[in-house]
Image (cartoon, rainbow, N blue to C red; front, side):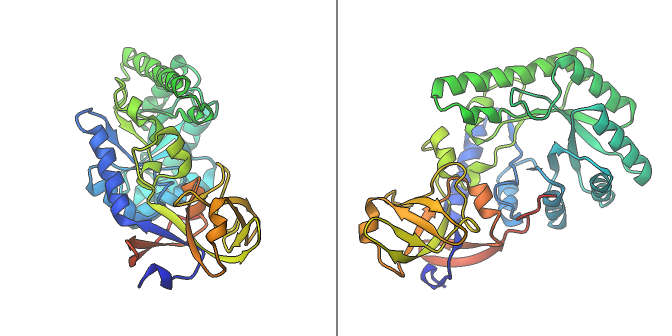
Length: 355
């Protein structure tokens, strides 16, 4: 099958670029002593996670239990859930994964989380594993001080939970557009994480896992003492938002194919709308950079730019998502390509697994 044979809108995944991005990331980490546990929130596809593991990743990171369940069904792991598991229903799902023999570690930030894990362990007879999430400046979840992290670690040990370490995420870096200021912010965030590491070590609770960082931080985090692993996810496909922060390192492997359905004097209309494409990080652009997705309605998009003059109704164009994660979450399959040939279809099994 050729790309011209596909119905639109649909997602195209360039397999050669995926493999190149995986190799690039492993090359960055080679010799640093820092491992990779890539985040599943980007591909949401076991076939991609398997490529990452075969290339040397030590496990997979998830944000939701539904993602962990997809990986478990595929026999992939170990799994780090970089999120808190809250509520009896979810705690029991976590325990069910442990009962299946899945190696999964979850994050805690409070006594409430520990109390729920302890209660779930008593109900199920399982022994959960946990890392302590620390607030590295994002002001989302996380232990606020090194002293609090030490206290929580002691509680985990005392309660019989498998204490494995800490994690922190410097996601607030994405709000800083200036390179030098962003680098300083990343260094500060990682220093905060290491303050917790040092306090835990002094208390005899040295963390085995110190997990941090998204794709845009890897060049700094991979050279930061104390960090043991990175949770980068976006690198495997890249997108235009990530390219703003770490340009020229990874290639855009994911595109959305759409059909032009109308052409006017100053704009055109495509058949991809907000139900198949997202723009929360800015307007998606065509691969050649001449056409901008200026506006999304439900099932239509307004196209502008110098490339409009060359468009005709029925023509196909590919756009690079500004945020691949949320765009692909609206689809069920990748059409895997080499050049203009479709060589496979990969189901996006964790799409919309937001529970």
